[in-house]
Image 1 (cartoon, one colour):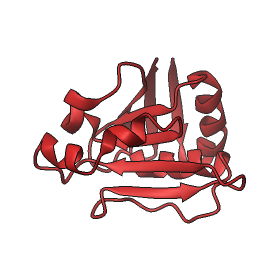
Image 2 (cartoon, helix red, strand yellow):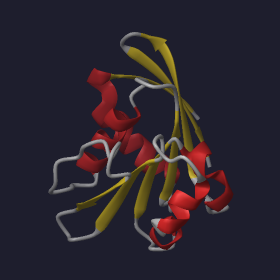
Image 3 (tube, rainbow, N blue to C red):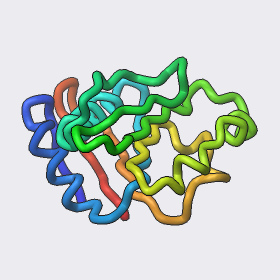
Length: 137
């Protein structure tokens, strides 16, 4: 599936992505720095009705948010990981097997421990205000 997104269409795109992903709870977001990975995750979390402010976990590596029905959502930013052992030490795999949404930025850094089934969104910058989202299940 290919979607064109702009900041103005982000909310509707989030709902479409959630519908298209089906039962997939592990989401991988690939794209260059500044392509909008965190911005898209913020829109997804709004659609899932989180009660917390969504911020990039650049330094904390993992952020946990809670929905209005008290379901956790996990947000990973693997950019600062130096080695796969860092992800193993943080017990990423237990989050992945939790059955909760896991939104993972820079997943190529932890490729060796990713689950077999996931929803991949590759973000391409088309213009300064438009993104192409290529979605693969």
